[in-house]
Amino acid sequence: MLYRLLALTIDQTILTPSGKITKETREAIQYAKSKGIHVTLVTGRSYAAARRVAKSLQIEEELITQHGAYIGRESDISYIRKLEEEMTFDIVTFLQNFNIQLRLADEKNAVMTKGKLPESILGKTVWQNDSRFMSGNQYVQNVGDYLAENRMSPCKIDAVFEQEREVADVKSALEGMFNEIHVIRSAPKRLEIVAQHVSKLNGLIRLSDKLGFKREQIVVIGSGLDDIPMLQWAGQGVAMGHASNEVKASANWITRSHQQNGVSYVVMEVFRKQQPIEFLERINIIQ
Image (cartoon, rainbow, N blue to C red; front, side):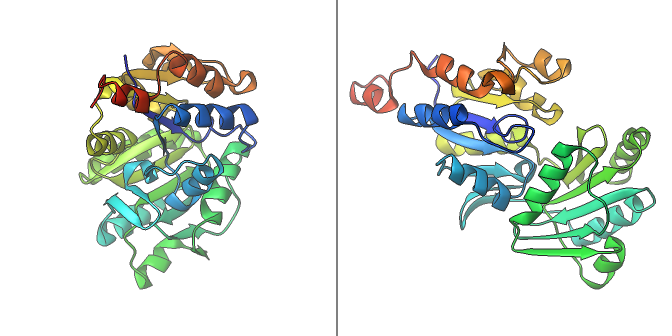
């Protein structure tokens, strides 16, 4: 199979648990690009935070961010889908009945609850880094009170719970109360809420359709529960070696873990025998 697009998730795939990008991963991305492969990032993070990672990897393609709610490159936005203002207020009002940290983000700004950060190192890294690159951050005591005076139409609502046992019930309740949303459980204590029909998979489909690539020509490398639909859909779905058994079961290739440079290993293996796209176009193998 001739592959044309490589899509990678950021957290626990491109980035190590400490938030670093290894030398081997950087070299692997450059190797894929040298073959003429389109490379993109697919993430729940904001565009500003994803762009920082992409710039470090010299990726200039459009990025799929906010779980597919925002797709674009610099000021060139090809797709954006936001939650409606009134519905956002109602969702936040409901969520504040629980002991949680809230964060609302659009393409440039974020509003979040004052207080302690998520407990895990990964949670702190994601929460801090995603907010760090927004042009405007507001820390408020009560997000609901803030929205009562300052209506907002975010791309995504993040909710990190104190008690894991509440998460499944809250997810079910939200899905029953609001038909116009998609609720993603991206971690045991974390829910991410976006507009209906917004997802990493739908974002990837939108981008691949725009580029004219078939699903069989797409390689996806991921590690999270919210990556499963992409791994199942892509021509080559690759799970990281440290991913959960559920994620691994959805993939048709399991690469090595972070410690074993899993991204580098699979990129080199997949594209090693593939001739550069420019050469294949020149000899009319592809148009």
